[in-house]
Image (cartoon, rainbow, N blue to C red; front, side, top):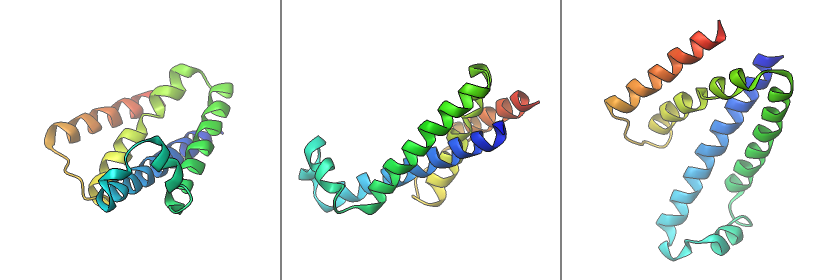
Amino acid sequence: MKWILLTIVVVTTVLADLLQSREMKAAAVTGGERLGLVPIVKALATRPYLILAIVSMTVSFFAFLALVQTQPISFAVPASAATFVLEMALARLVLNERVDAPQAAGALLVLAGIVLLGR
């Protein structure tokens, strides 16, 4: 069950972060004057991906609560760092962001730590 919960946490966190980044970048491109809390709240009505990001964050939060209820925090928090690896890869592939060698090396180190943790 811990691996199912961890997968839900990682996938929903990554989905939320990617959608959030996509929508905030789109908002900045369409009108720089739309920065700030009030315009972001107003954008919720017109940006369904932003709503999906919030729903994903909510699912992630409750899945993480379930994970730490059944597993030690010393497992749950480091294992959920898999989000860093996936987010970096998907930011490159989906959002066309630049990923340099030190960032990629750091992601590989995180991945190695997660593999060691899972043993």
